[in-house]
Amino acid sequence: TIPEEQNIPIQSKLKKEKLSFYPSEFLYAESEGNYVIFHLFREGKEVKETIRNSISNLEQQLSEFPYLVRTHRAFIINIKQVTQKEGNASGYQLTLKNTEAKLPVSRKRAKPFETLFDRFHD
Image 1 (tube, rainbow, N blue to C red):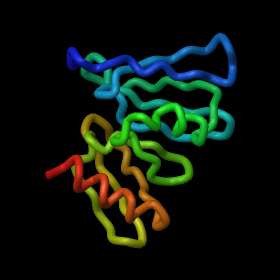
Image 2 (image 1 turned 90 degrees about the horizontal axis):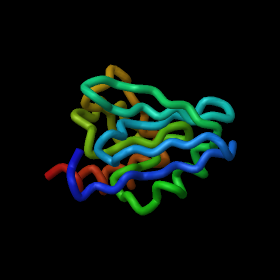
Image 3 (image 1 turned 120 degrees about the horizontal axis):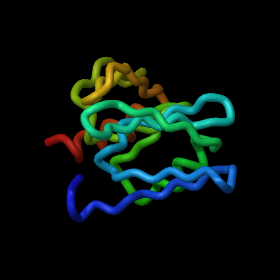
Image 4 (image 1 turned 60 degrees about the horizontal axis):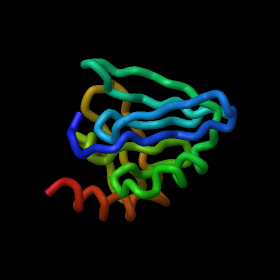
């Protein structure tokens, strides 16, 4: 982890569930019904953590991190982890470091994604 990084605490809809991580560990989060599955990179491997929450609520909790971006109704990704984007303005498929998953960027979110992508990848 990077020394000046702060841990991000995530609030769950269930009081006793807690999750926190460093921004650099966060690969992506995916909405699954009433749950959000976090894909984190810890100790050299991808780790999944599930908490009861909505992706919209999570998006608000992560709003101070401009590079943790909602790319689709079901996904929030760490734009700094993107190694490849395929597609065009009608939507992208993203490849991230440290995970096999291919992640979508919906048409509606393609433009704002472009802008941010360029900002974090020069």
